[in-house]
Length: 65
Image (cartoon, rainbow, N blue to C red):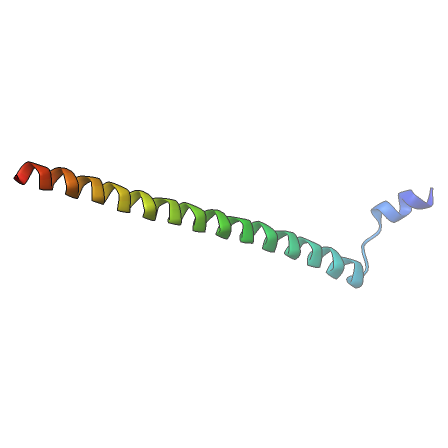
């Protein structure tokens, strides 16, 4: 029965702060994952743009001959 009372009581300020800290740490990890993903996608697209520009330059140079 004690666990039921504990379940519905208001948390102490320390308990609330501890829970908020855990939530902030999880949010930070998710943000870091998003940064890693965005960085990888940016690098991928940079390489893709370089490859496509090279191809276009080679093809248009061949037409000029």
